[in-house]
Length: 296
Ligand SMILES: Nc1ncnc2c1ncn2[C@@H]1O[C@H](COP(=O)(O)OP(=O)(O)O)[C@@H](O)[C@H]1O
Ligand SMILES: [Mg+2]
Image 1 (spheres, helix red, strand yellow):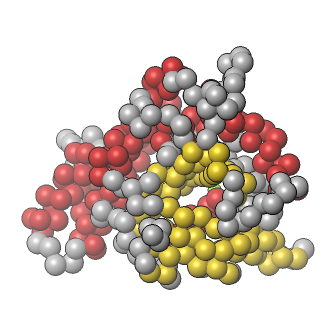
Image 2 (cartoon, helix red, strand yellow):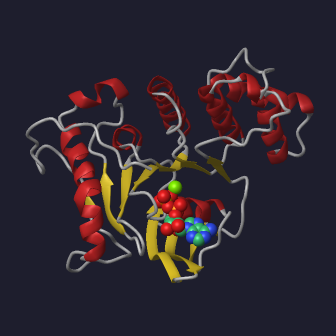
C-alpha cells in the first residue's frame, strides 16, 4: 500500500558567498492518513525548510513529495499551515478571517453557508463570543486559536505546524495542545508538526522524527510513541514508559544529534532510518530527568 504522504529523496541547497550550504539531501519519510508526526532537531537543522517544501512554498533542489497520489508543486488549500505567529488580516474580525479562508476553499458556497461553517470552527477552538473582535483586541493565545480555526476550517488533507505554541505562556500552550489533540484525534487529521519541546512531542505525536544537526542533516531515527492513545497531558508522567521515551529524546538532543551526523551507524540507510520504540523494558530509567528543550 502506498503512503498518504511520501517524502522521496528531497534535497535543499543554498548558495552562499562561502560556497554551497547543503541543508539536507536524499531525505525520505512517509506518513499514513490520520497520523500525527512531530519533528525534533536543533535549530538550523532544516525543519522549517522541510515544512516549507511540504506546504509548497519552497521547491526542493532534488527529490519529490507525493501527497495522496499527487506530486506537490506549489501551495494548495489541501495543506494548511500554522506558524509560530499569525498573519491574520488585521482589518477583519475573527469571523472575517476564518470566513475568508472558507470562502477561498469553497467558492460556490453561499455567504450563509460560509458563515455557518466558519462559526462552527470558531466554536471548536473556544472563541465563541469573540467572533466580532479584531486581531488587535485579542491576546496571543486567542490569535493562535484563530489561526488554528482558520487552518482547520478548510479541512485540509494535511495540517502543517511550525512550533505553533512556542510563543505562548505555559497555561495557554497546554490548553491549546489539548484542543489540537482532541480535534485531530476526533477528525483523523493528518499532521506534520515541528516542535522543540520534548514533552509536547510525547503528548501529541504517534511518531517522532529525530533530525541530526545541520548542515547535511539527516533523519537519524524514527521514534514510535509507546504511550497509550488515550493518554492525558497531565498524567503523562504516570505512564510507565514516559521517562524511557523522554530520556531517549533528550539524550538525542544533548549528544546523539551531533554524533550521528558525524558518524552514522553501520548499515544506516537513508530510505529506512532505524525505528525505535523506547519503553521501560528496553531502556530502564533511574532518576527523574530535568525538563530540557532543544531551544528553537
Ligand atoms: N532563504 C535561505 N537562504 C539561505 N539559507 C537558508 C535560507 N533558508 C534557510 N536557510 C538555511 O537553511 C538551514 C536550515 O534552516 P531552517 O529550515 O530554518 O532550520 P530549523 O527550522 O531547523 O531551525 C539554516 O542553516 C539556514 O541558515
Ligand atoms: Mg524553524
